[in-house]
Length: 189
Image (tube, helix red, strand yellow):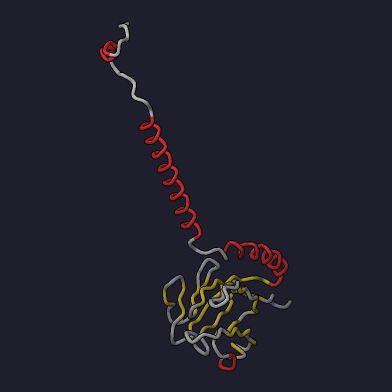
């Protein structure tokens, strides 16, 4: 019985193009700036090498491994690798699919996918591409809509106030008391 292959799907948005990247790589995975500086094997296993060309990324920056259905990362860099905004400790660090991993300018998630789950992953990838359309909206879209709504509301209140004032000022004055009616030659009540 052969061991089931384990894959890790890394998902991040390219910092230059804004394109959603989501490679599915067989573990172990090396990440770095120069492919020829990353090892080809780790612990007797051939590795998948992911090259991220950015100056903040070390030549061999990090290693992702899978042991007993758990994804781990080991920082190999000089600039550091960050897990949920904090620098990871020296040595091996466990990752969950909810964690955000920052390597240089790239913020990514890592999800373990077993070989028999690959078909489901392809179906989910189509749904992820739909969410990409929402991700392409500017981050401040909600704020812009709220400001627009407030401007329209204030304009509506201003128009209402203006119309009310004009109507009030254009009304003819009507005598308010009985004594003023007598003065104008009108009989009392």
